[in-house]
Length: 405
Length: 148
Ligand SMILES: Cc1cc2nc3c(=O)[nH]c(=O)nc-3n(C[C@H](O)[C@H](O)[C@H](O)COP(=O)(O)OP(=O)(O)OC[C@H]3O[C@@H](n4cnc5c(N)ncnc54)[C@H](O)[C@@H]3O)c2cc1C
Ligand SMILES: [Zn+2]
Image (cartoon, rainbow over all chains, first blue to last red; front, side, top):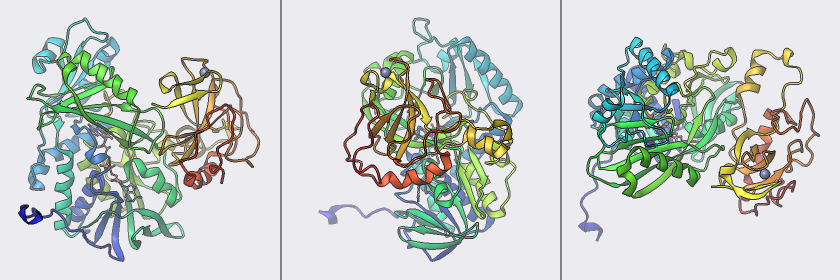
């Protein structure tokens, strides 16, 4: 039977054995780890490096997210890093020589209360001042852009308008990971799957190696990109992070012909919906309230999200759910990421992207690579250093940026 | 959906409850003496245990009382439910409640040992068999095997 199958297509990356030592080791083979390794090799000439992944490449949140990419955040610091990411998304398919179906179909953030309306208009203003494309749409304009949305006032939370970012959109998350992985591999980076980091070797307060299920690996520098498991790794290294890990779920429907031309997010009734290229309706919910590492959440969260979806999009009422799944998201109290140095010398951390780090992948990688290579912050990640929890310079993006995805 | 056994009302759906995060975080004894680092720890840093975690829950649409729970954050098994103000049942030798702890329902101040000390030892209990039966009666101790 096997000889009847076509040849396996070319593999996109090697599966090398770990070397005994590297100039830098990145922990976590999700989007952020791979992007970091890519920019370390490309921008800083660091090619004797490895990405260690305990499972399979992009098996964490990277290929579990709802792929929404936008940069319409309220505060200057966030707008700067997310807009930089968006500009990178615009050039990456060509740079990585991989069409990962980045589709700038726009993202709409609905407003359902007077408070929402005021906050949204304020955010549009802030976005414009930061050079981020943003518009305020009245309900009839919302309907024009997305005809399947119910804008009548016969629902519990009628649509009172929306913000719209035309350059925002979606991309195929697994292909993004593969695109980065292939380029990393071409540049000489070792991508090592099934390699779990179980501890660190320190000389005084300086990290000099990582312990793994495949032996100890010496390294000059360590970059943590472990998303939901960041606290576990920090604890191994002997420091704490202000992170709580929560389950976050999403689901897809069976395939449908194209009905949904853009991306619609509603903070207030808590659902966000787009239609994948293949035709599935892709919907995300909120986090489960409790801490969890189980990559699954409670059904009532999904029920709540579906109720909101059906009210906003009456034609979804007869669509069937194909599958649901969960990831583990690393949330911070100000809903902003943590990128920078740690209390351990030569160990750096990129985490806290929580429910919304897919869109940030290219900028996280670019700036984190800079920090690992130079030991110093990049202008774009400086405000996101761990120290902000002591100085009080929080970047409070809760609610301010609509749903945090 | 978790099935949570409220000490006052019995087994109810998770949707009746409100999550309160890590238990046993005492309000600082001497707030004016804290430096920025210590305030950061109290305000923003909580354990994020993978394994058995001591956490607070409020039966918000029932008796409106707070209680503590030991729950496995990987399997989500509830191992024990015990009153606010009582020490962790899997830490038999734990110091008695101290500090400005209060057992009032809305209190955020119930606490015992410093969280950072608890953190290290909690993780070591994560090897407790998750097959242990969930004991969800009020004030019970952890099932056999969970106390290492
Ligand atoms: C359901 C869901 C929907 C989402 N929707 C969106 C969205 O629409 N838009 C958006 O911008 N963001 C979204 N996100 C968030 C986004 O997915 C994450 O912020 C982002 O993927 C995190 O970075 P990452 O890709 O590197 O994480 P991950 O892919 O989780 O990578 C971390 C990796 O570290 C590995 N690891 C952990 N511990 C170890 C160890 N000890 N040794 C070795 N490896 C280890 C893990 O196995 C994992 O592969 C969503 C997340 C979820 C779960
Ligand atoms: Zn009750």
